Amino acid sequence: MAATTHTVTNQPPPLVGYDVFAADAALTEGVGRHVPAALLDEVRRELGELGRAAGSAHAQRWGALADGNPPVLRTHDRYGHRVDEVEFHPAWHRLLGHAVSSGLTDAWSRPAGHVRRTAGFLVWTQAEAGHGCPLSMTHAAVPALRADPALAAEWEPLLTSRVYEPGLRPVAEKPGALAGMAMTEKQGGSDVRATTTVAEPLSSDGEYVLTGHKWFCSAPMSDAFLVLARTPGGVGEDGLTCFLLPRVLPDGSRNSFRIQRLKDKLGNRSNASAEVEFDGTTWARRVGEEGRGVATIIEMVAATRLDCVTGSAAVMRQAVAQALHHTAYRHAFGKPLGDQPLMRNVLADLALESEAATALALRLAAAYDADTEQERAFLRLAVPAAKYWVTKRCTPVAAEALECLGGNGYVEESGMPRLLRESPLNSVWEGSGSVQALDVLRALRREPAALHAFLTEIGTARGADHRLDAAIKGLLTELADLEGIEARARRLAERLALVLQGALLVRYAPPEAADAFCAARLGTDHGATFGTLPHTLGLRAIVERARPAAGP
Image (cartoon, rainbow, N blue to C red; front, side, top):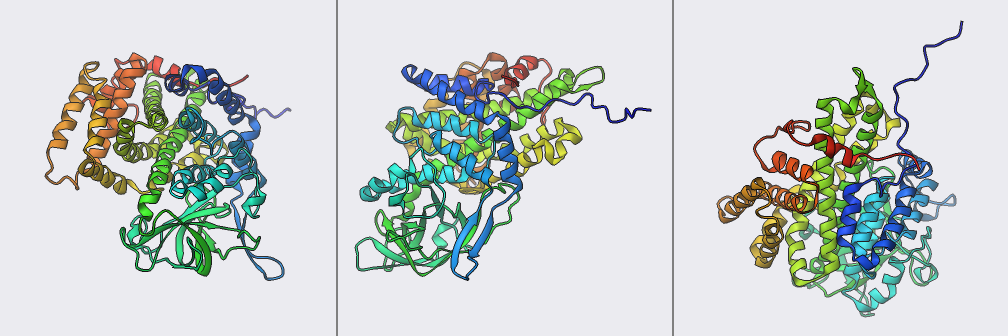
């Protein structure tokens, strides 16, 4: 008798063979909003190509292989020579190569460069998030290097190149290069003032040798690194100075860059994060003025924080897309799971969080492209507030989306555990939550123009929704009360981000999405978990707007 116990029914097909960009209404509309009309067809075409690649079976396979085969440290070759190299799975190189060739390290020199790169980063990160680290570091190194025009002239064309070439060689012989960074130390973490790495000047102007140990070095197989070290007799920010440290010296010899170990991380497992040691012969070039290291890297920090927002938005979007896809095909109690009223509430709530994160990331990118005094002031406050809030929302979104798949979501083959493990990263990276909240306070205290620009931005939406108006009024009341302000910094950062998201959705999202967001995030009728939206809202329309369509 034929066995029938393993007949497979009521299992969704994989979400594969679709255009990640075109399937995301919030993203496509945001690109249309922020990219000049003359460029829009070109940008949509390049993002469509990237979106179809991200949704393809081979890119999804690369992502699973890269995550499942973490990098391996080789300190010595077979003969005992010190090499300090990290080996990656071929899938990592395919992902990184496709990203570089798609312009994801090139935003600073092309029109609408930040919006198109941010949108591309959001799309391609959904294939695999770990390789986003070297992309982000390389992109963010450019404004720091511009503190030294000679260094910028040498390195910027390589860092913005569309050619990825792995392996350590003199950069003069390579068509493109990647950059990493090594700032934090074991005793200091986010407090870079506790840095103990020292730099001794050589006879040639701008050249130094470094001695020290860095606790986290991002992407250790990059061609060069930005690092902070103390210079003798340095003034200003406790003597901290920024340096560019190449892996290979101009004469072809290896710089002294001792990789002590790779971190065994919760997520982000395809990417290498290392502890590195500089032994007193490690050669580096000064970037900017002595004692002005923090000021030199500040634009780099802001750029990487925007990538934290974008990376979290990407993880959220992919998690929500998987939940929407699964519940559209999975049947329970006589109809598709997604048509059950309670599940629809959960899905709509998750979709709102994803859309708000996407809208905010694109608005920040557009401010970078505008590059006016007003927009720069806006970014000074909006970036740390957005980084604080969006990155913190990523983990609960990923966890709830996983639950939408039930037990199927808890197994590795679904891809949902990988998203969940990745979800806390951006909240920790480039300054954790309290660091961002305190940076919000610093901007409020030191730069009045930042608050003015922020209030001008949210003021454009006043009068459109009574809950948003009430939230703006409450925010102004909080800002007027300086009592215990530091202990309230997290609450303040959260309110700033939520009000800004609400203003963006009221202005640009469909009415049902804006109404639901204001009710659940700014009003009083909401619960503490996803799926507690007021039942009277247009939940079906919100879900359908967010649903990805698989297939060609």
